Amino acid sequence: MPTKTIASTVRLSKQEARQIDARAAQNGFGTRSKYMIHAALNYGDPAENDVAAEIARISYALHQIHRAQNGRIHLLKKRDVADLQKLSRAALSAVIERAAR
Image (tube, one colour):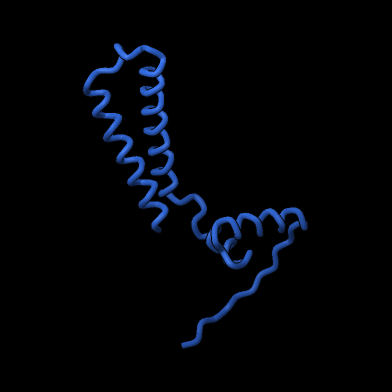
């Protein structure tokens, strides 16, 4: 059975079209249409919440490292350093996994 195609019209300014084209090219999409379809189908994706959670973990880890850098090493316990290591690995794994999708 052949695939049916539905065409639709979108009104936007030349500036908006150029911005969309730039984002499409930046993210590896061949056409504006392919990018807009992908964006619309993935809008509000719950996976974005996972990314936000990983960013929060990274922020916490960086804060802890900043404490140590400023001579407040006494505020870091051995367990904190181990937690930083786990958080860093988890965050990097999440970013790599997300990029692989």
